[in-house]
Structure formats: C-alpha cells, structure tokens
Length: 145
Image 1 (cartoon, one colour):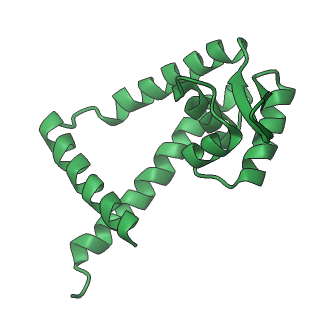
Image 2 (cartoon, helix red, strand yellow; image 1 turned 180 degrees about the vertical axis):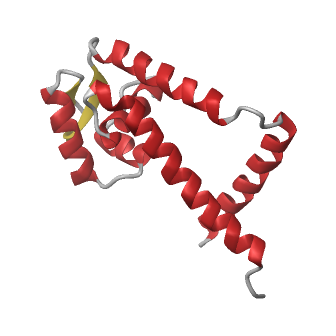
C-alpha cells in the first residue's frame, strides 16, 4: 500500500512540531543553565516515586547508560543529584534528587506549562483527544516494529 500525501505531510509536520516545541522550550529554559538533556533527566527523575537505579532512569529517558552517566556526572557536579550504592547489587546505583533540585524542577515545570498553555491556545479538547488516539496508534505500531 503506497504512502498517502496526508501520511507524508503528517510525518513531516510531526517532526517539525517536535523540533520547534523543544527548541522553544530550550530557549525559555536557557537562563537556568541546563542543557535539554539535563533538564529532561531532572524531570524524569522527579516522576519516580522511589529513587530509580541508573539503568531504570536511562530507560525512562531513552538514552544509553554511558550517555546518562555523563549527564549524571554534570548534574552531580551542580549539586542537583547524588548516586547511592544499592546494597544488594554492588554495580547498581540509585539516583536521588538533591534538595536544591526541587526549586529548579518547579521552575522548569512552570515554564513548560506556560508554553503548553500558549501552544494549545485555540485547540479544542475533542480535537486533542482525536490527535492523542492517532498518536497512540502510531506509537503502538512503532512498538511492533
């Protein structure tokens, strides 16, 4: 079955929207002295109820272990995270947010929420629900590949 014009345009539009959204969020977060990769790690880390292992965090952020290790090194140097040994597995480390990270995460979330409000201006909730169903189907198809 050939690709339709709408399917092609949808993919291009989705990629453009993703890049543009991230770029704008990066621009707005620039004053916090965090790269996109580092603020993303902080946000993912804040979502865990219990301190994750480095491996669990890498899976959540969708990066390779060595990449995460470098990011954690820089976040640790900034006093935002700490690593704690796991008693039952000498090779594993739990990653904890330091108290100084909480206000920074709140700032990131405030800025991100402000951007979301702007970007979803004029978008009907029903249209958004349809879009989310389409995205969920595409994501499910991706997982099959």
